Image (cartoon, rainbow, N blue to C red; front, side, top):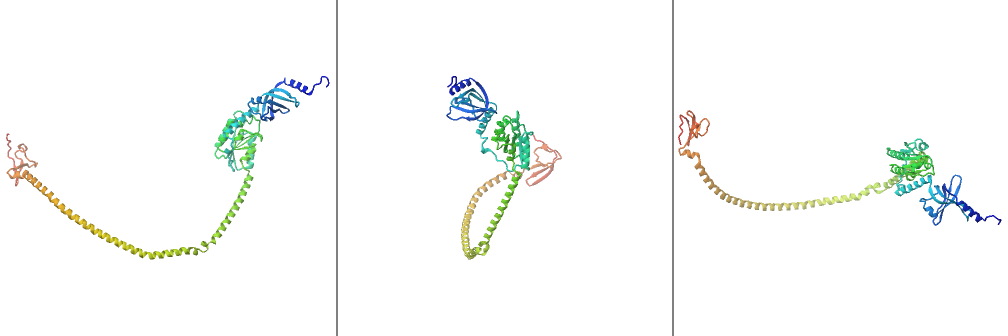
Length: 445
């Protein structure tokens, strides 16, 4: 070895010592991440448009970062350069790391996606099928973007029979979330809307963030009709795409998913027409064959032979009835005669018993009547004697008289009731005497 020359190990050790004095912060996109259980370190590459830098991070430092490292994530890493002597490779030893820029947004979106998935908003079982032939199609998008023209052009080409209702909304920037939610609410309340297309053209990840908002996701699930999303370009997948009933890669693809092709519809109708005509022909042939089989069966080919047994049974029954009627009538006549004799005997017995009872009752009534009348006759004679003694006629018969005023017909009880010249009538026991008062004289008592 020449004087002053270093061995490979010495040279790498010198480089390692020099590099580890350089402490920097680096922002780059993660690629080729290797995170395996049991490894003491995590290996990944940070890159930008022109360069790539191999990195390693000890497992305990990585676990303290608080997030999961994934390819495509933008991170900010702090550490020092070092050399891995065994391979002679320089690498950046990361001491701390945090998401940067779009990486933070992607972490937030991932966390929201996990939350909504846990609630069941992304479950396949709740996704609604699209109507096969929609009559009215709602479109929620920017009225000035390229997406609305792509959707209208596609619908006009594929399915011109449908009516398109557009809810023009803001799709990026401040206020975009509220506008999208309101647009979904309004288009869902439109009468006759069968399906809704939520779309916008391409843009940066930050431009698409309104479609990663929780309010938009819940508005999609609250929409009363199925929602088809076509947001950004083919690689872009937002929260809205995950919760939508159907996710298409672009606005054009969303329009193709929401509406059938007119040519496909016509082809389907032709096929259905052929199938229906074939089914009708086969059905008619089967029915004709069944009718032919039925026509050759005995009930139709020889109905008399089928009914002959029944006809004979009817004749036998009629014969039995004819022979049975006289006997039945005779038995019934005898039974009625017996009943008549029984009724007559019972009637005579009842009449005899009734006559005896009536005779006894009449005799008792006469006896009781005589007793009652004797007492009443005695009391009546006594009362008549009393009344006779009190009769005014008896008094008159003893020489008394009653004087009546001729004018009034009232009994005169006082001399003050008449004056000289008044006419009076005097009642005696055998008639009346008309008199005129000559004078009155009041006696002193």
